[in-house]
Image (cartoon, rainbow, N blue to C red; front, side):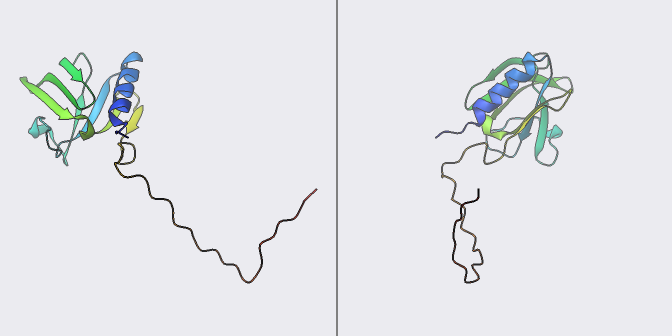
Length: 131
């Protein structure tokens, strides 16, 4: 199956806006295809206000997000792949979600847990009826 992350991202974005709050996205700026203002990147991440009042020509599809915004008064085209978003949250109350490798989908199915050895101590398993 394809990743559910872009769908969840869009749903949280809409939910935050529908509740009159300000959506912020945490972007992993080291991901290939990220075009973000480098001077604001800290520890490989940048937090962006993606509210309609902060962005012009906002566009989000299942692969990429792009918009125009001003940073230190300078206009800039910002774009990044959806999978570069590691979190989305509302500025006012922190409501949102963090995307992990598990929530972003994986091409490989999860491995079943390995059985843990349980001590038998020579007793045979049995069932009894309790009334």
